[in-house]
Length: 184
Image (tube, rainbow, N blue to C red; front, side, top):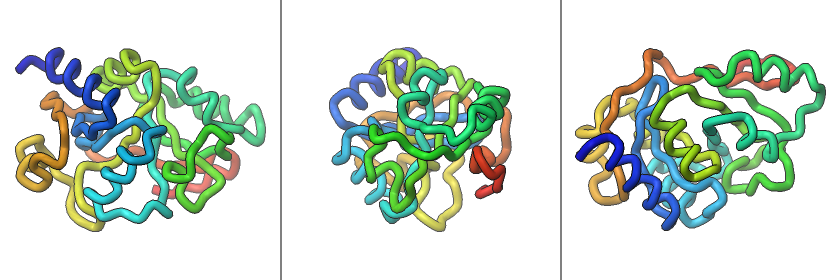
């Protein structure tokens, strides 16, 4: 199946509350509609990850992120905009639109605007951001191919996009926008 057909299937899957595996700048991610609690809970169960930790939300452009964040200072957003689209995740105070199953125990949300063509196609077609978390179980090595993801998770993932990863060898840096504290 072509990447375009896989992407179409993934878009439909997300609209119906499913979970996808897809390429990002550095690793394959698991994704879903961040506003669908049941879908997010499925991702957390698959990863054996606590909801308390929160999840990254990835977008195709800043308009999909702005409603979710409340920058403390305009310079905080300006710094993020200089790195987007790109391989940098920023943590901002969350707006009331961010559900607790995304922010976890925090009053913040981690967001990224991606330059990856698959991420852009997904978010542009859905007109919303996606959950983006590495395709692996908690505290396990990141899986480096769709084949490995299928072997580990099988039919618990509803759609796969077998396309190339971006050019980065490590997951994105995560930085608190206001303090510049590095979290990863």
